[in-house]
Amino acid sequence: MTLLASRIASLGTENAFKLGDDITRVLARGVDVVRLNLGEPDFDSAPHINEEAIAQIRAGNSHYNDPQGIRSLRDAIAHHVSSTRGIPVDPAQVVVTPGGKPPIGFTMQAYVNPGDEVIYPSPGFPIYESWVTYVGARPVPLPLREDTGFTFTPDDLRQRITPRTKVIVLCSPSNPTGGVLTQEELSGIAAVIVECAQPDVRVYSDEIYEHILFDGAEHHSIAAEQGGRMREKTIIASGHSKGFAMTGWRLGYAVLPTVEEAAVFRQLNINSISCVPAFIQEAGRVALESPASLPVIEHMVSAFQGRRDWVVAALNRIPGVRCQNPKGAFYVFPNVAGICDQLGILAAHAALPEAARARTSPASMLQMFLLYRYGVATLDRNSFGKIGAEGQHFLRLSIAASIERLKDGVSRITQASTDRTGFATFMREEKLWT
Ligand code: PLP
Image 1: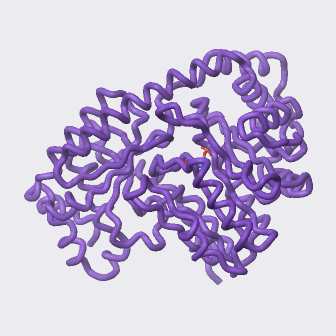
Image 2 (image 1 turned 135 degrees about the horizontal axis):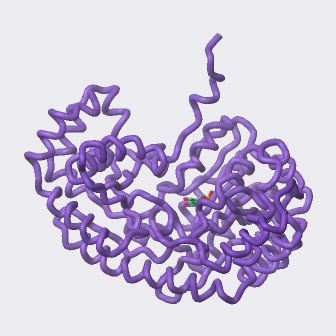
Image 3 (image 1 turned 135 degrees about the vertical axis):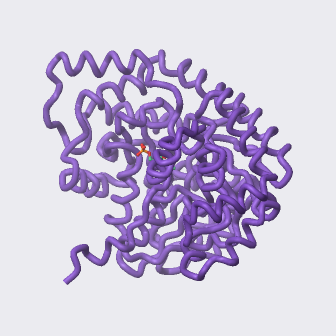
């Protein structure tokens, strides 16, 4: 008998958290690390939100509460989702969760049997693929095309839908690409889903970056498409982590197509976390309801947009880098195939022993070279879904860092991009893959 259940081997991870060990090692050598790996705003939660939580704790609101979420917050969420997506939402369809991540696992546990198929964007948030394999489903990555701003066509989706497709995951604005699906694109995608997928298919629409859109764009949800037909198939997931800069508070939610499905998510809450702290939920309600929130969000988004403008232009000036202009979220996702080639990384990867070669990728080797030798923390392509990612050479840089740090980071990447000798020495000395 083995210690760990066999299913643990199918569980993936989120490298944004895992990279911490390498960063600690590099910091311990006295190297200053520019951290462009983090998926959280470099802004604190706003005072009016903080004050509400403090007042609630002082008032003794520190007990167990409804596992589905307190009614006042579910009302606020229902109102917010209904008014921004143009669909009716009953607070009984809403389930509050500790962050926007739990609904991903809840969805896979609630709807997907072993052998069912789940379509999800690739590159995409790594937790989708992790849960798909964990529940024994067949992962069906949906490639996002660099040349069209990391979107996909309705036909790309059509080709992947089969009678076994149980869940289709969408994420807009996207982590890691910053791609945003327009209303026209969502309309085409919805038409394909209604036409080709089984009637009980579920669309998991991850809208956690809904507030972070550039160039005046508006957020659209697939739930609003095809009259009521998509609303009846769509789980809208969002939360407070990104738009309200509340990552550490752990507050998110899902809007389920039916009250019965919401009851299943409630039951999953009961079986895992019991409930989200009520004082946090009250603060989350204030975040959604207070007129003070909008200017705070606008200030943050405008800072992200200014940084995006600078970073994309600067990255595109580095020989060997090609970077699309993200339309939302706070990441850039440059193609670094040229750097991998000019530093000799492609050849070094090809020369690795088979097992080591399978464990890493050229972009991953570049990521480690940048961290260990130039003190810049980024994330490689494989951190966003490994299946089908061979031959794709990208890094994700978070722009949730000050413009000074971003300038420093990009300048270090520029220097690293021609340091062929440095890369060869790094391979010889660090022996990370042997
Ligand atoms: N979904 C996407 C696309 C994300 O990028 C993240 C966080 O990075 C989450 C969900 C999880 O958010 P939370 O921290 O609220 O659990």
